[in-house]
Image (cartoon, rainbow, N blue to C red; front, side, top):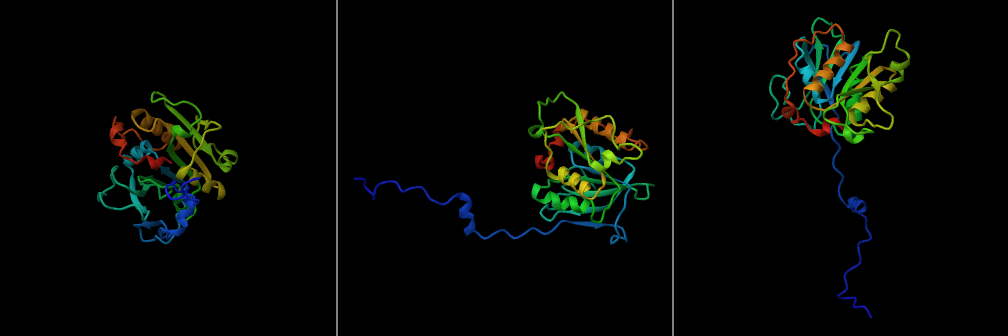
Length: 259
């Protein structure tokens, strides 16, 4: 006969997720919002092109673009301001909005320099595309995630692909925004903020293009992004942008920035 006193107790019948019902849920996070420095901040912006930089190389290239000035920022309440500089810096955790000089705000640039979790991606995408900013065309620059790519990737490979909304792919009267790139291979996956932005463009019937490049860091990746921007904005002078081998400094960006 078994000894019921000294015998090990049976395992709990509760699953780990069942135990969470006894804890108080965390309060909801405040919604992200846009802040503009200009007087007419209550009016919607209607740029002909909105460029959104998510990858480290694209943030680097657009940061060194001389013909831009800041008009606003996107505030994500859970991201602290501590440690940010007064002037835009690559080390800041920020999301600044710029316009090109002498462009009459027809081209806007958004530089996303902090990680956006998948749970917040939809809210941020709605703000940047279709909220106070209603663009005619959108160009999103991100990096390929090796874990989501169908195939092997080497640091020696220089690759770039694109995805387009159906409105960009079918209804381009003049030409596609970015030419010379193959479409992202079938079986590979894109998620996070870049996917949410492209989905928002698709829902609102906006011509949207997502460009994905590899590797994530280094000189070759910056040159690749520079080439993509030159195709999309042929009138933009990018010759003065320094291309330095600062891949170690690039890695200060959180890896969640690309998920």
